[in-house]
Length: 198
Image (cartoon, rainbow, N blue to C red; front, side):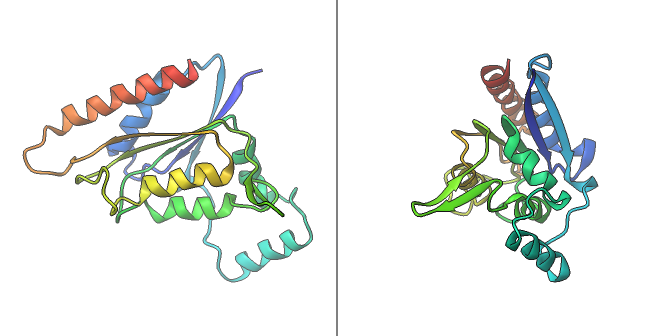
């Protein structure tokens, strides 16, 4: 039976997205006979922030341990995947709010993480969490870069064994050959996909 990769797509510029080009390069090297890819396009998802009645409905379900409710379908899918790949651009020092809303909706006690006397432990089945991103400026190694740092922390929180980052940056900087920079990152993405999923 094919293993499952969950692709969380937050490439908001559609076909004009440079991050989407990076993701396309990555998935071009995934062995489709060995891996089933579930493509979740966040723009097309009916996801909401945890406010008002939507928040309290979730709290009531959790209090009654109703983890099989359809409300938690995405969280169960996230937890069951053999790997998760997230693609999102670098926005406002991290990533688009839509991705954070998705993360809020899959962060469910008893599904993607748990608590015990030893503290919080991840419950996700996946071994690898991959983050693909493009940045307009230069942020590698900077404390101002919070997108990758956050996803890296999540890989431990959710219980993934490994975190992988591929990025292209300086895409909006003067004098930069952006096509060359993006192509180099696409090659890195292809190599990572071949290493992990071929």
